[in-house]
Image (cartoon, rainbow, N blue to C red):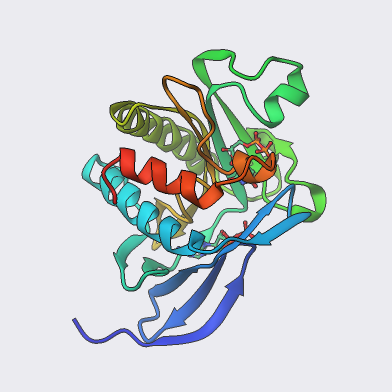
Length: 238
Ligand code: ADP
Ligand code: UDP
């Protein structure tokens, strides 16, 4: 394959930067150390976070591909960079929850730790200024953010990911509490985009229920990057 040359910055989000490449179908995704919470109101740089998330994401995306979920992931090319397919992103966050934690506890007045059987699903509109409001299928279609077929596909794929990853985390002695996925169009096909890392999911130790994900940052529990390494270790990534 011809050498891929990194070109202009396309966009810099809260935790990653996206670059054009010499191949117009491919981007380079750079995982930075920047860590944010509360729609960007709390920001810190955490040494080593970009590298562990890049490695973590590569492992999870490959595992999902092996289990029949099509993703944008192509290859990891450095400690903090991966090549991905260029997607037309839908401005939607798809969240599946196996256990109640975070915003659902505040919104519905339920205790953290409540088991959700069956797991529940929520759509959010990706807009920091609006605080990523929760939306439903009808909003997505009425505002033209995605088609009804894509809405169904996003739900099905997000639940399929749950079956695959719940098992993966359970095998490492952990509980996958909840997570957020983003999808985008690639030449007419909906692919899983963005990332799957401890920045965008909740993972608890199955025995102790210790939080190992970005809640350590949100709640000032310390050892954020160290905990990401603990999850990676338990999964055999490092
Ligand atoms: P944010 O601040 O938006 O939460 P990040 O710092 O994670 O985001 O920046 C990554 C940005 O790149 C997000 O807007 C995400 O939707 C977008 N993105 C992720 N994967 C792709 C892709 N394959 N093609 C195009 N855009 C992507
Ligand atoms: N999440 C995310 N990005 C967001 C909002 C949520 O990655 O902009 C993830 C979050 O890490 C958690 C899940 O989606 O794993 C559900 O988040 P929740 O709605 O509970 O919001 P929070 O209280 O975490 O902001």
